[in-house]
Figure 1 (cartoon, one colour):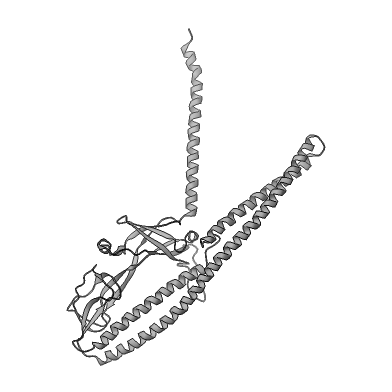
Figure 2: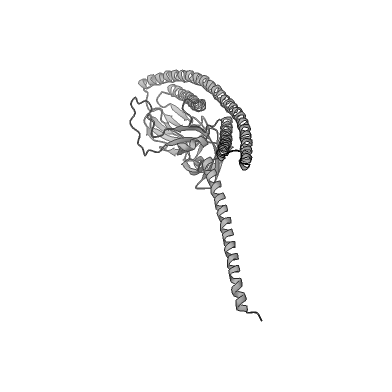
Length: 408
């Protein structure tokens, strides 16, 4: 009868070896998964901009008393909706003021001159914007053509390198055969091997350059830059600046026209006891109410504030190294911290040099070495329908959100 103890001892090493082999296989598998995950993370980290938190802002203007008087019919409350040119309240003139009348006429004349000046600037800015747009398209086309030409040149170089490699390999194989026959020395084989390896390295370098140019070509087609951060002379940035300036001028023209209407109404009602209606310059929500009906107010005294829900934005501050991954008109998704709602927006402009640029200074002071190199990314939010829930939250102005830059 066989000794069972002996059989058990003989099988023990085999079981141990199997167990160790399984453990090694599992460890190798887990290591491979970890390597893949790490590679995917590094690829994502190098091609995306991390989420940032920012606070939604909006345009809020003060409605001030255009003259001394008594506030009447002010029935508005915080969060009430008002329409463009709606009467907000009435201001009753308490006394006749001839000097005030002359001042109103002067203000009307000045406002009309300002409108003429703003209109002239707007026309010139519009011309510059059209030229900048043409330059932007031309620059994009030139960059695309340049990278396409580079790729064609490199592809020809790659073809020559492959031919030279094939010739070098034939030479190496021939000399290796002659060495085995004792017809030549080993030194000649080494020379042929070195030449073959050099040609192979040349092929790899040309292939790397082709991939780099192809990446630059795709970036140029999408009006992106990979080589460096765009300067202020870049047509794309110039277009952003001019567009923002044109919008600002158009808004100033509109504001001055509203002011003229108010001043003309005030001029016509500059008699004791006459009523001056104060109207809303745009549709929006009442942000705050500072005074009440029956209150006597001075000229320029703040009565209430209006929030323009059609003009909302937020500013995200990112490292300048991430600017190359962001472009104007890029989609942006904001997730509100308080409610979890998602709000859409687009990149309006990018401004670098925050805290380090001192415009207008003839002699610049040394920049601190530890100063962060950040860029401002202005995100313009898409308009939303002003329903009851949206108005109750003041159009999300003041809400904190997590900002994520989407890819097209």
